Figure 1 (cartoon, one colour):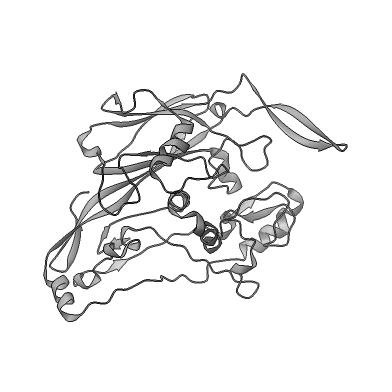
Figure 2 (cartoon, helix red, strand yellow):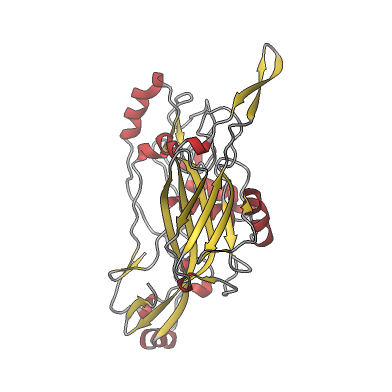
Length: 360
């Protein structure tokens, strides 16, 4: 989102996925998933292109509700800028007499939004069809609150300052193979409300499996699980936690204390979250960490080294349930990638018809 020539805030598709896991109420989750075409990968089922077991939408298109005439698909994607939530945070457009507000959007090629399961039998004809699909048009649906003349005059003539929430996004920190302990210096600044991170297998992008945060990619054997074992946050070399926190605490216990909604245990539910505020859903400020006061903020991660034990899977063989043992994939011996997201506070000042951020 831009005002004039200044970028005010930025979000990514991955952040939208993480945000939806924590902030979309359970009773609205299925409707939200329908609006954005987010459905789980189901091997052997690809109704979108009527092809067996090869492609599905990486958001899982496969519901007739999307298709207006059998060919065209329409999605509705909520964007969580600070002024898109509570009405108290509505942006005073009337005060921007000398600047324009713009929302820029970059989308992936359609072929990159479809799961790929490597079955060469179907490759040629399916990708020929997918490459023919493209984005036809995009629109913004905006809710306006109308003011009377006196209110319009006050907003237009008076200097105003707003405390806003924005996002700091640090993506694509590569973790080399054979590394089970690695430290990342995070370029954070300003007061930080909460911190979120995920770790992926680097191969996930080869399958267009963008929101898979586990140690398995698509059809690999075994139950998907954590890549990270525990984490510590070092502030100027001092650990924020009395000892490194276990992945289960960061995935379950910490969100349970404050978040209204907790991600499920599925391919895109292995999310890690640490709060510096009391209530991440509250409109008013209720706690933060001022990252600007620290010269160094380091995320110290320990990854699993699982060479010493085996995984198990169950299958039906000759009418009987058989348990099959196999070596678990060791993420520490495969390239992985870290993505970090922070919600932070800033001050937006509107003066003489123009808006600027007080802190960079």
